Image 1: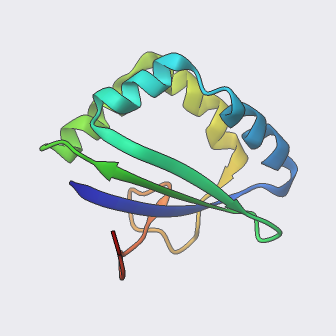
Image 2: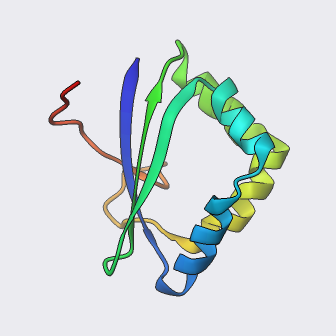
Length: 109
């Protein structure tokens, strides 16, 4: 199992939309997340900075393949067409990232 943490901004005028979308995530998207071996997926919002912090556990054996499967899914692409315009990626993110990945520096069970 691998824990992941990531951060991205959310456009101030899109906070309500982003919250509304996540109050009723489509069942197909939730099923896809599970089929791609992601568990305990949570997104937190920090206002007034308008930062989203996401965390999850990856329980698979081929992260790149699972992420490619997620990105290729037509229903997920439709979901992203609604959520991505709400987001404001960090300028300091790595090449190829949308959400900036974070280094885990502490964990306690």
